[in-house]
Image 1 (cartoon, helix red, strand yellow):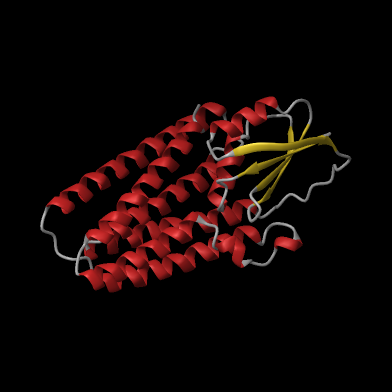
Image 2 (tube, one colour):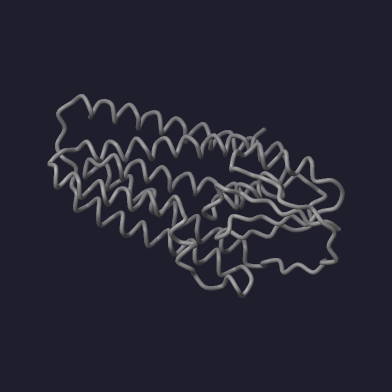
Length: 264
């Protein structure tokens, strides 16, 4: 057996891990995948050549680069029997916050919260695809990925249109206190998801490290919405909220493109 180690420069949270798992699901020569999110490393244990696996990783545009391929005698892998339960847990948390952020975003007139809710929905799609598509037929997996990706792009485009309407219109200022409170709760939710998934790894990764939390795009987005809320209150302008909303919508579309690539 061989093991190939990859550096995945854009793998900064568990949703990217699940994207990779789904993408590599069809490679029968893969024996095990070992993810090291804090150090952005992926170790693939496989038989035969690595070329097709490497091509699949490159297709996701996550900054994949093979470091080394070498022989290994390791054959005992600690598979996580609770993986499905954990995926359900993080899916429910992400989908619940999609509803919470979308609702409060519309009520408080915050495009930052609306955009972040779509980012939560994107993560829900990834976990859902992992639950319902992995192990199923390739055709089924591709259909689910395409539907999820196109739906996500549609929502992001509608969001962009609303940002433009508000930018050129005369809208009421977003409720900055709601933005801050909900973003802090979302920040906690993202931390819980990361903790649940990471504690299922080996003992050395069982505790939640600060370096793991603060490399997550989701956390950076939450902090961005909080900063935007403070600027809205300070400047008495809705522009900071529209700016952070635009940035997050762009990230949502990038995530949707990655999901669509699972369908190829």
